[in-house]
Each structure stands twice: as structure tokens, then as C-alpha cells.
Amino acid sequence: MSSLYLVDDHQLVREGLRALVQAWGHTVVGESATPTEALAEISQLKPDVLLLDLHLDGRSGFELLANIQRRNMATRCIVLTMSTQPRHVADALRMGAMGYVLKGSAGSELASAIDAVIKGRRHLGPEVADLALQSFTQQDKDDPLSALSPRERQIITMVVEGASSTEIGLLLHLSPKTVATYRSRLMAKLGVSDVPALVRLAVRYKLVDSEVL
Image 1 (cartoon, rainbow, N blue to C red):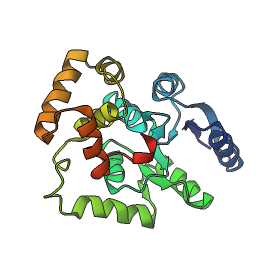
Image 2: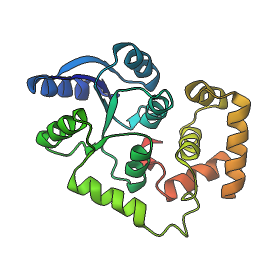
Image 3: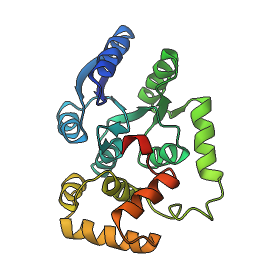
Image 4: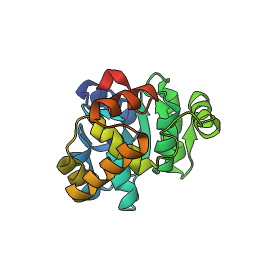
């Protein structure tokens, strides 16, 4: 069958996923709780499929998606998450994810997603497809974040979650000065003067979930 790599910050979830996918005949070649460790191991192990959560103990799965896309890596990604934010679905697809599965789904849904992605097809369950449609068709005139690119939203998300310019630069392979310039320009663009105001804006327009802050 195929080789998989698991990224989730809960060990119990990883253990359950490992048992499940191995019962389906796949091989789990590695697992991690952080984007940094995962990127290094995926580069070395070259798994066929990555199962990726978006919320990783203060970090974001979008970091890993961005690096995989930037490096043009062959590993195909399925986002496996609790997030039902339409924007998260759309951003994950824009950043190269081949599938998006909600953690509340049946195991058969994940099995179908893995089989589809291995064959080079996208997989969105009915509920997720509806979320994606909402994101691409909703009226964003009153949403100041709607015009931001995935990279700009990624940087704002990391700032809101407390990452410094140096930390963001290391993860995104940018200089701290470039990150600081990004942040200042984006805050001016959004009309906010400090990080607390940026946090409130990000929560209000559901760029991030308030419970993970």
C-alpha cells in the first residue's frame, strides 16, 4: 500500500491514527507534533501522504503546508482537523492540500480520502465541499482580511499566536527585517496599531479560533 506521515500535537490521536491506517494496509513511516520536526523528517522519509492537523500547540499546520509547497515536495497532504472555518478550507486548498477531512468524520471518510489522494485526486466530503463553496462565493466587502494572500494571512496568524519576527523568519525562510516589514505593512493596511487590536480583528473575522489563543 502507501506510506503515511502523521502530524498532530496529541499523542493519543497519533496512536489512534497509526492503528487505523495500518489496519487498512498502509505503513506509517513517522510522526511529529511540530511543523519544524515534521518538515525535516518528511524531506528525508518522502512519505506518499501526510495527515496534518492545523492547530499544533500554538503553531499552525499552514507553516508546514507552505514549506512543502515552496519546496515542491511530492508528498500529498490531507488536512485532518476540527476546523470548520471556510477560510481554512480555502487556504489549505490554495496551499496545495489534496484533501480536507473533519475529525468528527467516520473512519471510512478518511479511508476514502487517502485512497483518492494516493491516486492523485482531491477529496472533500460533502460538508467540507460546502465550506469551500462558502469561502469562494461569500461576499467579503465588509471583511478587511478578504484581500490578503495566503502568505499574508499566514504571517498574521503567527503574529497573533505570539511568534516573534525571528521565529517567523526561521519558519518561513525570511529575514526578521522582512517579517517586521510585512507585519507593519499589514497592520497599516488593516488599520490596527498594535498586536492586541490585530488579535481582536483576527478572532472577529475568524482568521483564528479564539479557543486556541
